[in-house]
Image 1 (cartoon, one colour):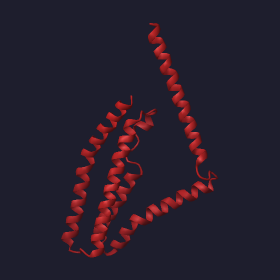
Image 2 (cartoon, rainbow, N blue to C red):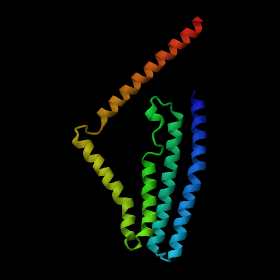
Image 3 (cartoon, rainbow, N blue to C red):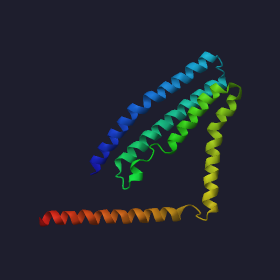
Image 4 (spheres, helix red, strand yellow):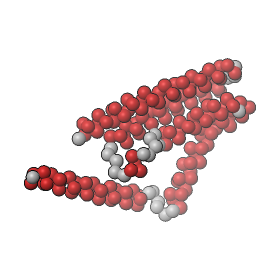
Length: 172
């Protein structure tokens, strides 16, 4: 079973790579071309382009890994089958693209558009930290324990059904 899951993950990773990589390369090349055409290649702008490319690569790798991880696990509900792949990495990729093309559109406020890369994740993290501690969950262990308990019960039910099917096959 583990080998089948690894094969599924590898196939999903290859499929996602063939979809995402050309799109991301085209977007980054278009951004670099438009910056070059505009003629504002300062040291700051070159630094931000390199940082944005690094963040794009990190987000790309995260999306690919998330897709492979989700594909290798079996889904239990219909909702889990259709969840958006990529998770927080997709959000990071969107922020990078917003910063890249926003700095082109609003070139007078390009520093503000670059700050979006840092401010939104900072406020997002602070918001979740505050909400988690104000709701009395402390470090979040109680919610993780209930999820682990639910997962354990679900797995026990699956094992029970599988053993019943094996018994029925042996009897017939």
